Image: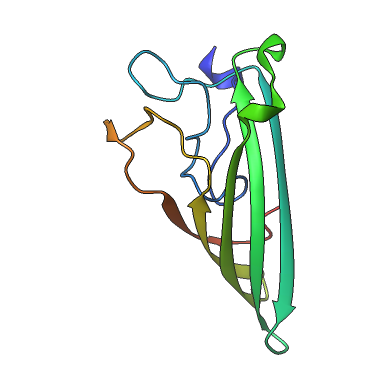
Length: 127
């Protein structure tokens, strides 16, 4: 069932990919979700003043069809930089992530994914 499947990618997980792009692929090349997942993020932060700052990050993760298929060598990695500005409702975040391990055959909006980077804008902490 799709609504119970795991996906990774996007502003709050592996930031080198768009939302839900890390997943097993169906025969059509589109992500279909899985039943086992590993994800982690590491972020170094530097303040530029009382309200602004920058980050450098390394994210990794993978989704597998089931727990028996889990292999740590399959992890997808992304690195990048970001900018933070503190507001009363949480930090404004602008992150630029770059795929270190692209997914062969991934389709985005029905076409082959050719862009190894993603730009994310959001409000609130990433994790």
